[in-house]
Image (cartoon, rainbow, N blue to C red; front, side, top):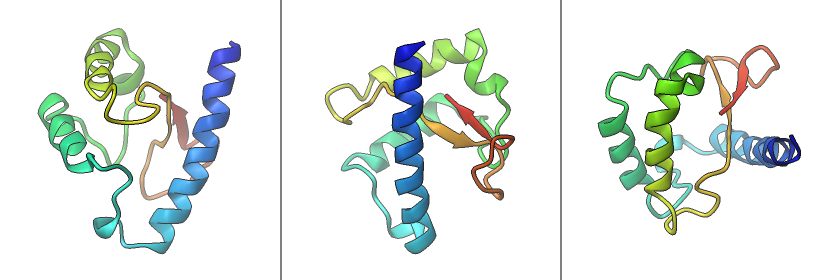
Amino acid sequence: PRVELAWAMKAHQHAQVYFNLISSVDPKFLNLTKVDDQIYEEFRKTFKDLKIDVLDPEDLKSEPAKEKWRPFCLGFEGLVEDFNYGTLLRLDCSKGYTEENSIFG
């Protein structure tokens, strides 16, 4: 529980910074890491059919989903700082970060 709480606090901090960035800069010109293009390419290969505008929590938290997410994240060890931290996601990208619209993954 302590580790998960620490991850949640770090995720909240990252979400605030990220949201401020995407709110002030056109996201198509924004790079969060040096390997953003590689991450996106791998993401699309691994999660071809994942609907990202409105997320289904089962696509993130179910056992079959975790079996796909673990190796995906581990593939960025050494390339991305905090590669294996959880993150705070909006379930519906058209809405803000609220308790009902956020999930810790």
